[in-house]
Length: 380
Image (cartoon, rainbow, N blue to C red; front, side):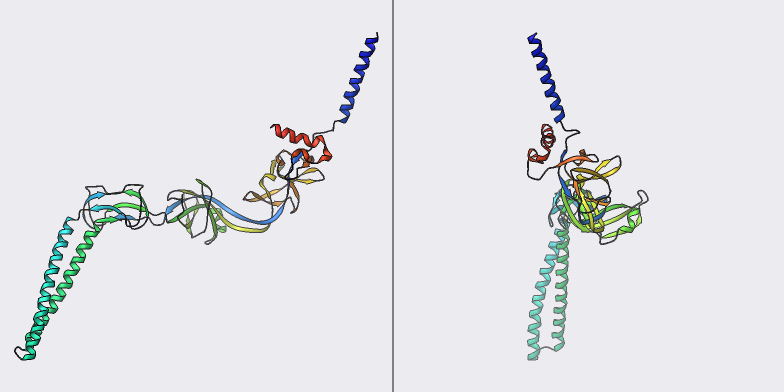
């Protein structure tokens, strides 16, 4: 009997302790742990964006300047070459023979002229002594003058033959890359026949297709930011060089042209991301991208006031460098949720985490309820 009473008393004590513990539990979910920031005003560039292609501004066909058989090809497709580098050799045997003949004719005429100079000098002395007439001396001078002209012609022929012989060596006119090798060893080429297609990466042209509807906002000289899908973080700032008047029949797009200097990693035929600045708003209301979340009501920002998250439906505008322009629904200077905004609901209780402090030390007024979200996050 005594034992039964003790058991009943122990059960009553346990039940009372449980009821007290239940009474101490806070009602509702614990406050969400978040960080905050302020909506600020700043400049926002309004842009039109597209994906374009690059082409070489300098893209010539290297043709034969003399006729003959190709005896050497020293580079192939895809080979990078420097200015003056030898690309191919055309048989120059005939030019070498002609050059030797012209050189011999030049020396012969030079010797005849030297002899005639001496004749003129002697005959002038004889005229002064009265042994011959002035007419004889004049004839000698005329022959000397004719030989001088013949020597000039011989020199010109020699220069021409040497130049033709030099043209048999095909060299690169600039630094570039061989896009196509047209001629092969053994081919007979005529003057003007293509041998190579050479492209230069020093000057590139970007063709940017924009929708026809963007035409009123695009103008020559507007700033453009170009980037490469293959080079994250790489940017080139340039300006619109030209806008072609017509619209393509297939894509109904404008062709906007931007000329740029070649950069490492950019090649003709490659693609570029382009962003054209069409307007700039100086006093735009800006918040970080992570503060704007999607809800059934639309895009919202959670304004923080008196420990509560108040849902504000906003109209978002342009985005740039991790910031979003807020056109409607939020004033500048408002405190908004940053980290943790995606987990909030309207009028949810929040605890603001101060920068640089561990979660367990935040908002001691909330006690264990403030620590619970931080511990849950640590387990994740």
